[in-house]
Amino acid sequence: MKNRLKNIKYTQTPFSVCLTLIAFLQGLVIYLNANKWDYIQHTKVAQYLIVHEIEWDSFKNAKHAIVYPMYHILIKLIHLFGKIDYKFSIAVLMIVCNIASIIILRNFVKLYTQNNSYLYDFLSIFTIVFIAARGPLTHWRYYIFITGPNPIHNPTFILVRPLGLLCFYCFCRFFTEYKIDKKNGNKYLVGFGILALFSVFAKPSFAVVYLPAMGLYTFITMVKNKDILIGIRTFIAVLPTLITLIWQQRYMSANSTMLGVEVHFGSFSDLSVLDVIMVTIAFLPSALLLINFEKLRNDVYYLVALLATIIGWLQFYFLDNGNSGDFSWGYALSIEVITFISLIQAQSDYKEYKNGEIRLVLAWLAFFYQCFMGLLYLYKIYKFGEYWI
View 1: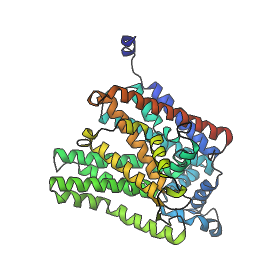
View 2: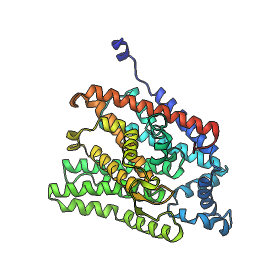
View 3: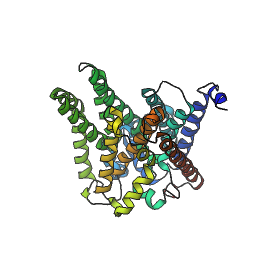
View 4: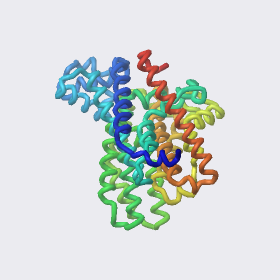
């Protein structure tokens, strides 16, 4: 039986088919929910840009969203040049973004293995789905308090995901090259700076979690290697993004109540210590099962992803900003990345882990469960036309 499995020739066809189906399913879900209030608010911004299709009075209540205009500009351009309505424009953009995210994740696999595998294809595709998991081990009581359904339906989150993944890659690749030769990697540093800036124009959520993690890693490297220049170079690369974030915060604070941030344990839902522990376990089972401190020493991708998850966790559970839950989005993205990297890494080198085979099987079972519940959630949105279900 094993020999038969080994003799199965790998083809890209299943990956392409599943990629198309998942992207189409999420696009359909977006299209069916594009009349919800949050979509309408963003659409009003797009309607007011470039060519005014609405009056100022209709736009002014949504003007705070103009601080991250990339989404609005893109759906406006699709609307104008494609001559299609905004609901369809949104769906088209979301399909493109989801396909881009999956392809980027699939290429991440090549960092750890040169082997093509249906298992890696599955992981790449379903990493953008499993975060929606709900069920006996991720009950609504916990699910709503960690991310809500926004990684599935929120358009600006879906837009920032591929930009954030590429930004993460460029940063980590720069430091990987730096370890080989301090003069290498400049193109990745430039790419990191540009993509970081683009990401905050799409949605600041990636930056508020990953930039602190990247800054901490840069500081550790600077101290460890006694090289202040690496810190200066990285800071210069990210400076435009930091200035933009400050402007966004000031503008939002002046035009909206959504950033009334205060320190408050338990997030905006007053979770108890036990609740926080249960939510963390429910959404990070694979990463927790596969934690490997030895690999943290040498793998910049793994370390930065773990630091971002810790920072996202602290932000989400200790910072309160009312009902908008903005500190959950970056944390949700960090969960996706740390789970993805943990599974790839362990699948490639499980023999280096203590009880590696058992831990890997349990981690995959947890991931499969989350994927199934995520697909079930997508079906429920399609069936009932609501994402708060």
